Length: 246
Figure 1 (cartoon, helix red, strand yellow):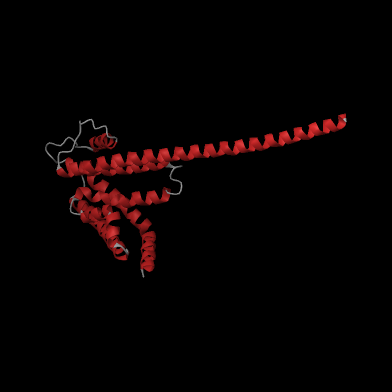
Figure 2 (cartoon, rainbow, N blue to C red; figure 1 turned 180 degrees about the vertical axis):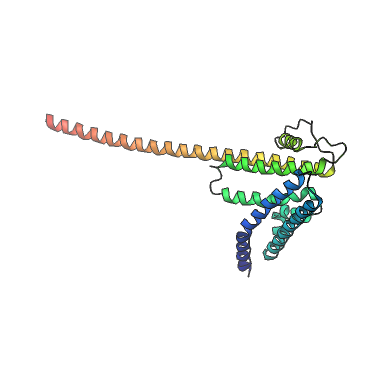
């Protein structure tokens, strides 16, 4: 029974992977449109809001199905806590962008085969995606506050860049609780992202150095074999010379 449930869960995740990724991209586009288009009519705003809610509903259903198919539900909740967080926070409008975690998961799986070889592309893609989401979220949270220092997308992008790189100039900072929550998540995510990139590069370098050492060892063994062959040939020549003298 357990093996059957595990296979059903794996099959569901495999089938839902790309549709959910497409919906996550749709969510990002619609959310960005809603945040950046200040001149949107009330009717268009309502349509965009409905689309966002429909995407949230699909992700909620997907999480419920995966939880039902999981054998160890407690372990599933522990290992998928970020997915759960994204589903349980639909009322906090600024945090619904967290549902794009599915895009990060898909990218991670797609790059897992040649992860170290494509670390530059992977790191750039993840950094861009996280930075874009954080910029949209913090702008959505901050721009209507009277004391806000982040009122344009340029301000939000600059704040995101200084935060995710752990520089933190302090010329732009969130003043709302939603913005500060986004900032806290971005700080943790920035440190984790830098750690992953550093560890991956270090692992890649160690692997390359191991390959170089293996090549050197093979070359050394080949050289020793050639030297033994040369010594054997010299010994044969000496024996022939002695025989010729006698």
